[in-house]
Length: 246
Ligand code: PEP
Image (cartoon, rainbow, N blue to C red; front, side, top):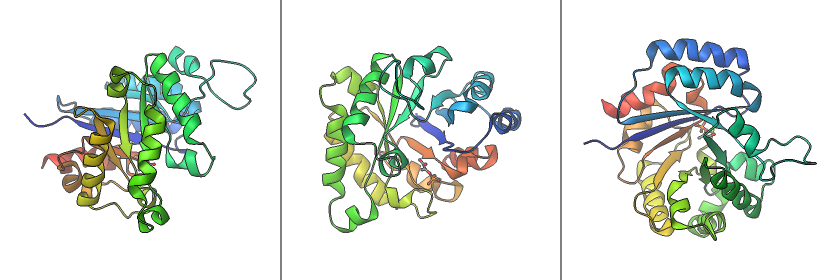
């Protein structure tokens, strides 16, 4: 049996509610569910209501791109995990490099968010990865070990197993320059050992598209893709799975 492929779309700060509705009108016409495919979409907060409808109609995972770890209170501008749970969100991206590097989220904050999402019975999609400077300085594994160990510290093995991991080299995100399949495989294999659970789901993210999907997704330790740019159109998003299968 072929492995199950996770195809998760991170829309970042794109797609209004109206655009989300339009996306799913088109998506519903072209998407063919398959037993070895799990599709997920992670929209901005303001589009989550429209995403809820589309995700339910098409049977795709309903996700948010961030959440704060406190349940409520004086945290202007933040959205809590119970607020997301109330509208049916099941998965939350945490630790994306844009949160780490543009908004300065430290490892400790990401760890608290991971724990809070797990405590709410939801699934964190935990992103980690090195910058170009860190890779060129020979620090790739040191940086990722810090990121992963701090996020997993104190978690029970069954919690570690529930997390979906996404290796995203910062230099490959939104640049059009993907990691090679060997580079991505090397890190995903190493990650699986560090995490200590051979069965965890590990995605690769960074300029994944139809033209590089087959070689990346065919690698032994890569279970799927976290996709930015190519997830904004149903055609280019689903092409990643069809390219892998053909
Ligand atoms: C991302 O934002 O997680 C991502 C991988 O973006 P892109 O596919 O555009 O590189």
